[in-house]
Image: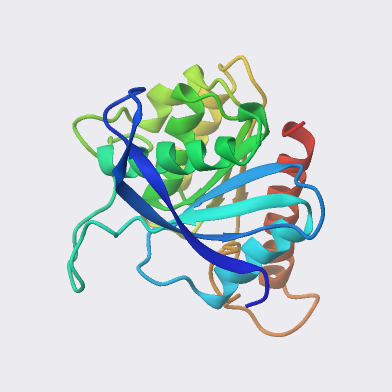
Length: 240
């Protein structure tokens, strides 16, 4: 995979305290060939990165973004079924954010893209961190919070401080259409740009191989193309 490299980022001791160089999160990153326009943090809940996800990271780098994914399961032993949502996930984001800043990326030129529960974290990051834009794919916890320490997304969305894009599939049982509509209404109450887009089926995810026939006129094929275009356009428009 040309252009990809491994690194690690130092975790902060707590909150905004100085980093502890002995505690680190492993990273997979890819840099653009030319000068960087900014950086994108990819939050993905998998022990391995799919070819589709790596292709997405490569494509973002080709658009000029330093694209970096922290390994969110680095604290857990192999075979563990532990969830990654919670303080540890946000700590890994903060370390990755600091890694980008150390490479000369300005905070308002950092975007975050998250999937599933990590997509929920991406929205919450956009309410509490100085990022420039955020995108969530299939973010859960819309009405019922994912943990005792996190708000439901409908309660967090009005407090967005960075433009946020949410992408959902109408057939996803964990994010029913009526709840997505509630989130759409909550997002409209924020002081920043927000957009919630729903697709028929589940074929809109840029982190997974498209589960659609190989036909350009298939609605599922159109969904994956549209969803990926929206991700790129959102960062292009809001990270300046």
